[in-house]
Image (cartoon, rainbow, N blue to C red; front, side, top):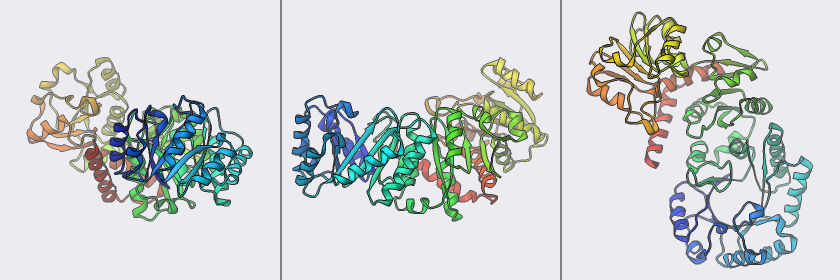
Length: 500
C-alpha cells in the first residue's frame, strides 16, 4: 500500500508548495487539476519531489471541472506528454477514450476510477465494475462508494478479496458515515493506495484522513503484509480520534510481544452504528473515548461493576463471544499516583466534575484517600462530591485550601486553553504532588508552575499509559510492556511537535 497526498489548491504556486511539504510523508502526490483555473503543467510535472498522479475530475464525479468533456480530456492529454507516474481516468469516460489514453500513455499507469456518491452497490455490481476495469486494461482500479452500514464495509472487503484473486490491483474505500473508518481498514484488506489530505481542512474528499494520521498508523507499507493474515482487530472508538496516541501505544506493545494483532482508530459518530461494525468485523477489544463512553453501554452484553457505578465504559473486551464493558480510567489514575506515594489517608484536592473527574474520585475513595472536589461550576462540583460523599471547595476559597495531592481533571491546559490552570500559584507548595491528566502538551501551565514551586509533578501521559496497560492485560491476559509503550508514545509526541 502506498499513501498518496491529495493536493487541492487554487493556484500552481500553492500546489508546488504543498507538493514539497507532503513529500516528507507521501509515496505519491495527486495533483487535482480540476481545482486549478490555469494549471502550469510544466511547472507541476517536470521535476516533482515524488511520483505524481494527475486527476481532472468533473463536477458529476465529485470534482470541480466545469468545462466541456473535450476540454477536460485535452488537459489530460497535455499532462500525459510530461509522463506522470499515473493518471486517473473515470470509467464513465467510456471504452473508446480509455483505449485512446492506453495507446498514448507511454509509461504512465492508468487508474480507472468509479465513484458512487449514493451508496454501496451489491457485491455482484461491484465485481462487474471490477471486471469492466480489468477488461479495458486499467493498470489500477479505484472504486469508491458511500458507506453507511457494516454490510457496506463487508462488501468492500469482499471486493478487495476478489481483486486479489483475479490479480487486479485495486484501491477501494468509502465516503460517508463510515468513510474515515473504511480508510484505515482498506489498507489492511489489500487496497493498494490510500489517499490522505495534506492537513486538516485540506481534504479532497469527505472522510479523508491527514497524512500525519495515516503515517502514524501505517509507518511502513511492508508491515501490512503481516497485518493481513488472521490478525485480531482492536481499536479506539470515538469521534474524532485521528489525534489519539492509543494506536501508537498498543501497536508498539503488540509488535514487541510478536502478537498477531492490530489496533486502529474507529472514527464513527454514532455509538449504535459503531457497535454494529465492531461485531460485524469481529473486533476483539476497544478503547472508548468521547463522546461514546456512556452511549456504547447500550450495545454491550455485560457491564462490569466499576463501569456500572461510574456510568461509563472506556474498555470493551470480547470474551466467550460476548462484548463486556469495563473501566480502566480509575485504575490508571490510582496506579500512577501509587507510583509516587501511598494514597490511604492522603488529602487530595481534585479540580473537575466531568467523566475524568468522576473516575478519579471513584478510584481515590476506593484507595482510602480524603478527597475534596472543586469546580468552576459549583452546582456540578457539589453534585459530584455529594454522590461520592467527599468534600467540596468553592473556587474563591482555593488559596487557603490544604491538600497533599492536587489533580487537574479538567481540559484546562490543553489545546486552546494552554494558558489556563485550575489552581492558583499561591496553592503550590514544595511538599505537594501535582498531577495533570492533560498529556498534550506534556508540560502544562499547571505543571510548569508546580515544578518552579518545587512540587513533585506527574504528567497525564503516565495515566494514559497505565490505563492502557490495564486494557492490554484485559485483552491479551499478558503483562503490558509499559517501557515499550511509553517510548513509542514519547516518540509520537515528539514527531507531532516537530510537525506543528
